[in-house]
Image (tube, rainbow, N blue to C red; front, side, top):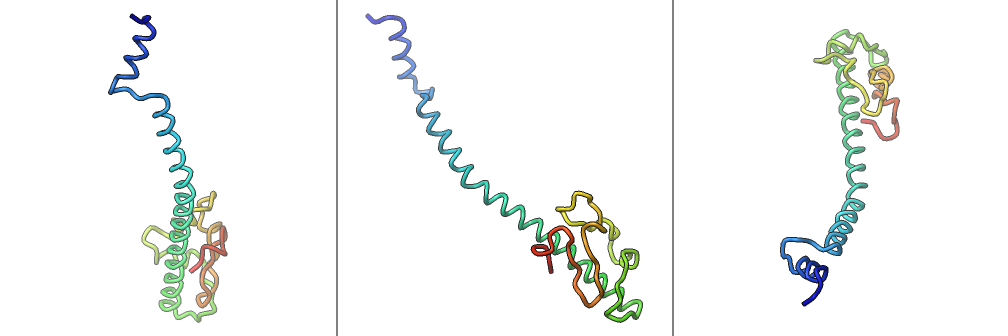
Length: 130
């Protein structure tokens, strides 16, 4: 008859409901590997979503500029101010902002430009555009 320790170890090894340290380590390694593979994709998808949100805001600003020019009879070279475009936004133009803007302000997020020139994002102009 073996010692108490040997009987306990053999019982643990035969227990069908428990996991060994090796099995747990393998599962943890696999989960870590999947996380390492998936994390860059999540970051890329988030940046693409932010760029699309900013492009949508730029499109709304351009549409508001065109409506303003048509309603007021202004030429395409006029540069409207935010107050001129405010009535063309349901929640007000001040709610439109670039998601990357820490100041969360329309004036620090976008440059309106003339009616015939597309608006521009001040935070990331090379990636966030119409």
